[in-house]
Length: 413
Image 1 (cartoon, one colour):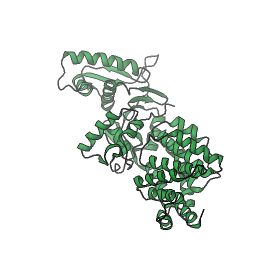
Image 2: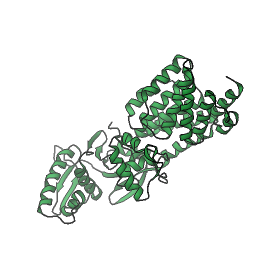
Image 3: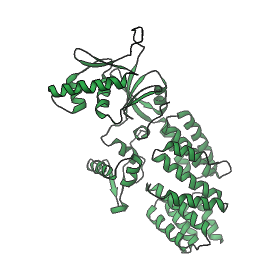
Image 4: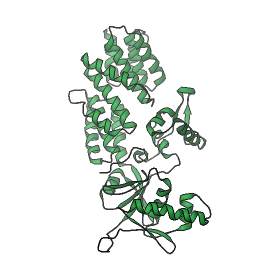
């Protein structure tokens, strides 16, 4: 490898893409193409970066397996950055195996972390933790160690374990400062801000206030019965009743939770659950049926009692007939939108394809496209590009963390 290529590679490792381009911008040999592609990716021109890396991979000969594998890894990183989550995990795994066999541990580890980050992003946290357990960052560079700790923190944040998340971010901050890469340091600081930002709203006894992630974690560990509008469930410590597939029942329990300890009239419940402006006898009959179903599901946590004017939530009764000590609150999203889950992913500031959003949300691409069109019509999302290159984005929600808007379920124990 000649001196210019070596110098360009060192510049990229130090986070200096312009310094790298100064050395290889006019060269078209495969190593230069690959380095130019990585430099363009660092500068944010992901389309040009992808094309350059593909050209480099084609130009490397059959005996240059390591170089081609590095191009695959760099291409996967670009796909991740552009939220093209449909890239081949098999190709990345093969590239990683090649790099490990040839002794390139740093790039092999980088490939591993890319796959883990993808799993975290689409909510497959158990798989991400299993894959992460096979990676040892200790002998690697500070930049790779930073990536490791960011992944650890990301999983902990998604599982609402704020203390381990903070500890991982502290280690990431130390490694990023050792690496002296400004973009990496900024990413760590942004993650720290996530822990301190309001994550949800607490609605209780007629008032509401914002909660940080640590406060949400403490709420779930307390004896408070929580109507969780972020995950459409009702929970008290380790007992969780999911109503994610029962929207009518959840609408009823949320209305009752927001009114607790008061009651909600039958007409108000009909309007909230069924969308009817006026309640007739058929609506009231349906309400009785749905309340019966809700009462049966919530029996381990809370009672649903009829009152002269409607219905109300009440503490369970002990075997001796006395009521348990009881407190109830509703946990709501910081910003509530019809398409809040789509907005949560767009709020990371990256450009997403509709296919990647569908994969991350676990729904159909057409459903996502309809949501994006509605958000665009409301001025809350915008698209760039056309056809298969079309991407969607929106500015981050100011002052809020979107962790609790994302769809993977919160822990039950």
